[in-house]
Amino acid sequence: MKIKKGFVLRDVCGEQVIMGEGIGALDFGRLLCLNETAAWLWKQAEQQGEFTVDSLAEALCGEYDVGAEQAKADVAAIVAEWQKVNVLE
Amino acid sequence: MTKKFFKVAEHFFAVEADEEIMSQMGNYAPFAVDSCENPVFSVAVQEASAPGYTEEISQDEEGQSILCGRTADGLLAFDFLLFGVSTGVLVCDSTLKQSTLFLTPRDVLAMSTDDVQRKHVFALNNSLMVLFALATSELDTALFHAAGIRYKGLGYLFLGKSGTGKSTHARLWLKYNEGSELFNDDNPVVRLFKNADGKPVAKVFGSPWSGKTPCYKNVEMEMGGFVLLSQAPFNKISPLKGVAAYAAILPCISGMRWDKKMADGLHKTQNGLATCVPSWYLECLPDEEAATLCCKTVVYENGDSAP
Image (cartoon, rainbow over all chains, first blue to last red; front, side):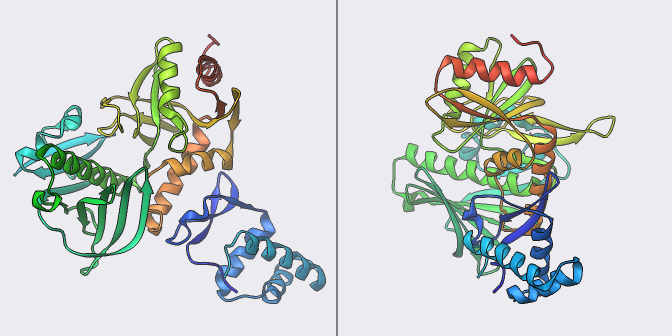
């Protein structure tokens, strides 16, 4: 999967927020606040382009002191959240 | 063709048009200047068929639509429709330094002279608003969709979706909060500046665009607050901070956010405004209490004594 075109992560008043700016994303009509881990994962997902829960979990383990199982569970939950608000394809 | 210069929110622009069009631009008269150097945009207006374009995105509101696309030469094109009828097409080069507005020829419109003029004025006003919003998006400037009231020297903008009652709430201030003055009913301009200490300060300006209400005042004042309105069966006001304030002002600012540079510019302005201007959420009825509660709360916040 990958991030849909037109969605960007921005610093809004000190918080990390996803918003829809590109053509096709303008009707998103909301701001999605991310915690530090989720924002880090979003940037990873942007870098990876095409990504999976496993590829993000692996990256997370490399950056943070977290076990593989826990990382996968955390990533899966965050990715599910993104899928729910329809910012992935 | 004559060329005239205008200054809105301290930004200059130039319009070249024939006398018939110029005579319809009374709302711009308070903003006219004799000359200017380096306008943020220039536009030539002519009644002629427009080049074709491929539509990329459209925006609709209450019978008015803007279609945006590209011509075969890759130039930006904006088509302004009123109840499905094209009134004119604005074609811009990438620098916005020399754009052309093609007003739909009268034989194509096939209407009375008055109706043709109304359509052309609609296209012209929309074109100048689009150009202004695009040309200033990276200049700490935001063209708002809001009603603006001046009270005790400060500007308060009432925000909200169409039909929420922005103008109605502004009218209630005029009636019940003595000393209030309406300085714009639809499209005030807000700019961020730095004061002598380097602190950001937001100023709001009147504009030649004011929706259905003729209120074209060339005035400026410091911002006192943003008030996001929402209809409710009661009156209640609460402060908006940080992301919530940003989310309140974002949909009220015109811009072409699918252009990365413009989106970056607007984001910077929105962040600055959300940080330095007090913002409020007013759930309200269209009544006296809404206006007095709002005034008491937002004006008191600015260090004034409560009325």
